Length: 217
Image (cartoon, rainbow, N blue to C red; front, top):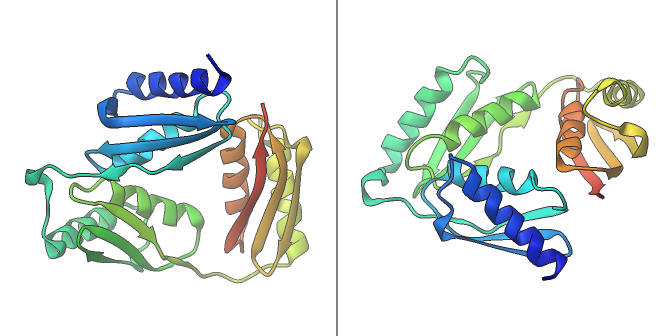
């Protein structure tokens, strides 16, 4: 068997191993380490979990998540009811600011409003993805805070990368301009990739992060 065949089999095994997933309708393919997931899952949360599971497998360079969410009849929700449940869940989460709002169109949830930090946006997206009836989540929350000096942002991110025990930052380069950070270079796993992205988003004043990292095993 080819290396890609073996990798696809490993990803399928990881999906089967994850108790949060029902993998019976998920097809996995790989092309030079670029994995594609196709098929159907029963919730948007499962779609997210499937991508995370695939990224954990050694040898995976990227994941194209083409999974479709197909709800059971009992899980289909009226848009107004779904919006109310998402808003209530957001209001009960202390990490989500009260300035975040929600729109729902045929089961597709759009998060709007303002936040100060990326982790607040991430938390809002996670909360919305967990609500029964959600088919997809679009995060349009704006980050709003003073933009510090670009050199300060660049320096603080580089220091954060260097002190992270889960990350070898020697192969990474960081630049910053007008609140936009670009990280380029090579990491040895998706876990390192995600640690680098989290470190960049944690810097004060960052409004967007351009990911130009390559995962090389």
